[in-house]
Image 1 (cartoon, rainbow, N blue to C red):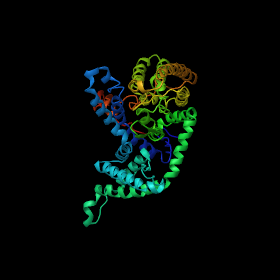
Image 2: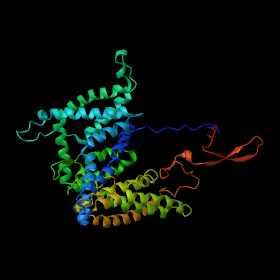
Image 3: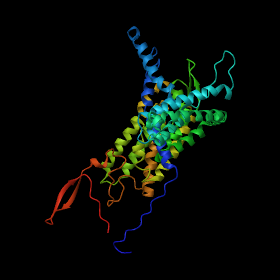
Image 4: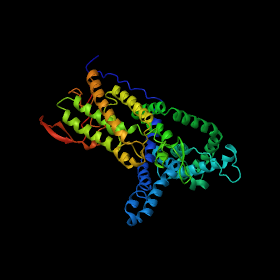
Length: 459
């Protein structure tokens, strides 16, 4: 091989369908991002917060004005949770479709309303007609129905938003055609979904019974799988079923709620099976891992790594957003990430075994922990368990890093060039100014500031 020969670089073959699944996972983040506001409003509007048993009651006669405020705030948050399927239909459609616009959201809205109307109309034939004087039980696909319709609207938008119709139908061409075709497809999906609903409902109840009968094992499997799917961006697909679909709870007003999040926020003391175990991990364990990464970094890089890891650990503790910290070692030191996933599963199993129940509207950080402290079951135990996990993570990560000589941040070889697109730095490459030497005609080398380095010639 000559000096000018370029070695052949073989690209890794992508897993079929993986990109599409990742897009679905990312699209779920749009509706999920609206839940923190809804959860905060719903929680503040409860009687033990701003209501008669909380701040209004503490102020006595001076606090009567807070009662309608609490009702308004609570109703505002409750409105979003009562319409979660519609919220997901709109959010997924807009988030998944490329070059989406208002017609995408309108198509999803129309599609879901048609889907819901069809399934409601077929409910007496599929489930059975209600007895006289009783309320008809309706086919309820919950958030799953919204996700399916949202994806349908997005795919139909991408296929037909530039369609051209005959001149006498030209008004309905292009983007205006998308809501029409989505409504037609929603009828077909609604009929098909109604026909298979008995099997779907039996399967969902079977999963729910298995988890209820074995919450320790079920939570361990879920917690481990949840973390393992984070690098692929598919964990939101896994979360949608237990968080928004699994379980049923009827509150004091007679309203029925599904999913761990809504049930917990509306007073179900058995909810939290798929949320509680995240608090020790996100608030304490991962900051302990960050400290281990700092202490195992090279002395010359330790101060820089401490700044990066410190900020990532603070974000994880306060908000429960762990991706900046997890992505710092998931690809560089994947054995650590496998350990992290398994330990997350053990945390989920442990809190269920101890009968601890807590929940969140966004993530398992200090903000949600404090807001929901009064409706949680044994929440102080989470701090004790979290501190123990923090110690375990610190010493275990430190031992594994040094024992296997893993290239965690700060332990890279000195001749490696740091990637300016590091996931821990939320700045695009264009914003980073580099100094590159340029050669002028006189043959001398001068320093010039460039925003992008010139490509290196090959040969």
